[in-house]
Image 1: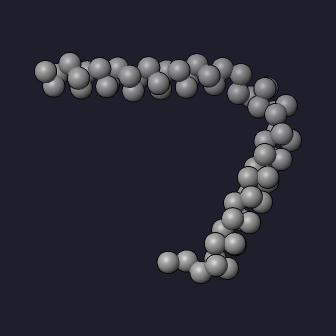
Image 2 (image 1 turned 180 degrees about the vertical axis):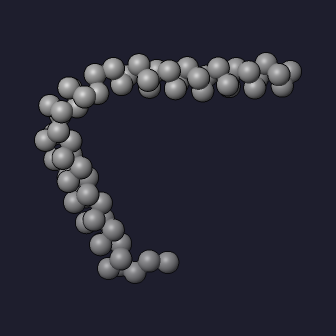
Length: 62
């Protein structure tokens, strides 16, 4: 399916990508605290909305 070299490239790319993302996130944590203060409320709202849709689906299925 994949050659040995392709798998090595994929693993190395994934490792470097994760390290790069972690470095960029650490660098921007100060900005995240300033500009994204109440973002957890939006996440909770989305989770509640999906939960309500799931409950409506169960309720009308019976």
